[in-house]
Length: 123
Image (cartoon, rainbow, N blue to C red):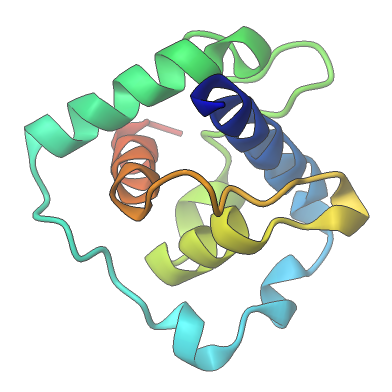
């Protein structure tokens, strides 16, 4: 079950980045956009997010998150400029119009750790 949830998460990020040209952020409620990561910003949290990424996302997006084939880069300015709340909302709700499933089954702390890891990536 956990592997299925994490696979869904990888697909979610893929679809998020692929849908970068669409204005998905217009669908994020203002209150949600303002959410900030409740976890302490730490090397440990980012490392946990990196491990989640390595195990579950790198197969599609590459070990360096620069994209692979038709799978987009997660280092893009679109991903980097999204607020914590935007990313968290997208991971929780998905974007079915872009083929992105919800990551709502992934525990919240792990979603925040994944966001912390993405924030460490250079463009």
